[in-house]
Image (cartoon, rainbow, N blue to C red; front, top):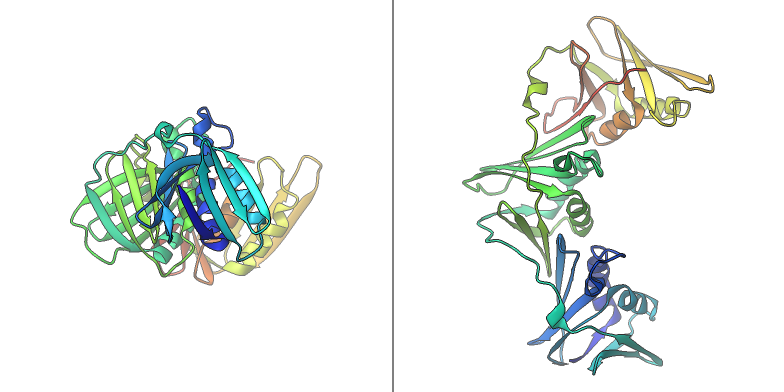
Length: 366
């Protein structure tokens, strides 16, 4: 195996691949990147056996071959070489020799035959979507995913396809985000799959060009997404997502309309003096006025008053300030609509007129 490649051409795909590779591996070869040179193409593969990224790079001239080399060491070498440098890679025995101008490196390699195969079932469903559209949907939901929850289906994101409708749902049990959008083409099928948390975060990072068109293939076990010269694959969470429809089937107080920016700023200021562990703040709602207050074990107190548009009964309810802040920050409209359940079991944070994005947060006792 032998090839010459420009530093910039190699650096970006290497960075994308290395992020999925765990620093501590049970199998030493999983810390390596698989390099395959074949028919004028360099194919790089990295995996942790749950997620896999394959990058394809055109190179000429090249001598075919396959090998695996330590991924992070190769990335660091490329990163620290001068911009525009030509990198020459050559396999010699069980070493990969890397040279560029006056720099010489020799990396210990492991044979490609030992590299584990990423098991994928037949991917019978597929749809097309714009990268910018998909990234917006991910951005508005992924922050609600649980992290290391024993209810492992919450450590991921629900992707629901219903013909031409796309719905993404994420929840950690205390809050829930729902984002709905239309696909450019009807799919003719209905499916619900759960993407794993790490896979969602990696995928969101890869969608850096909003103009790119994606092809998404999936089965009940796997998902594969084609992003330009990258192929992203992940194993799906084998579970059923809980039914959240009951939260809509209840009585609600009248909507409370408030200027989004003023509300964010007031929440941020009041939250400074909230309990560091629970981040609790209290909303006192009355006609045309909202009072936001908090206190902490050190006897510090904070209170802010805001003008609101509300016609209804006065009410008092408490929330985690961070949950409210993240919900409001993801609204596109200038006015936030807060709709509180009449039994004070939940609060919807919506756009003023649209219902494509809905955030639901459970109250807390202070």
